[in-house]
Amino acid sequence: MNFTTGKLTATAGANDGFWSGKWVAAEGALSYVPDSNASLLFVALVPNAQTPPNPTASVANKQLLNLVYSRTMGNVQIEPYVLWAQSPAAAGLGYTSSESAFGAALLANVTVSSKWSTALRYETLHNSSMPGATSLNADLVGYGP
Image (cartoon, rainbow, N blue to C red; front, top):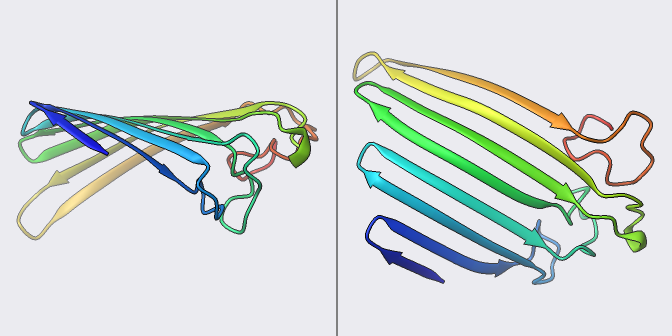
């Protein structure tokens, strides 16, 4: 479903949450475009807490919240964003505790000419799991607890 009024657009839907094969996730987005050079986007994905792992996601019950800002100023475009992920405890999946991760990034592009541009990307990602965590969902970012 989509709804647009003026500079605001809202989207809501259901999907199978990380390709789980079952329609168990709610998703939504809000976007605000104040002018042709800027936009603000908020996205949420909330799967069922019991969504099992699958070949595309070792932890498929994780809720994702993402906030993205985009701004163009002449030949420079910047796009900072933040991402938060949280996997609730689910005893049937071996998730003995709730785990979360937080990330932030800054993307920039400078157009030098019609044939040349250069880009920059800086990211940071933090998993809240403690070293030695044994819950099967302790590795939300793919590098271990």
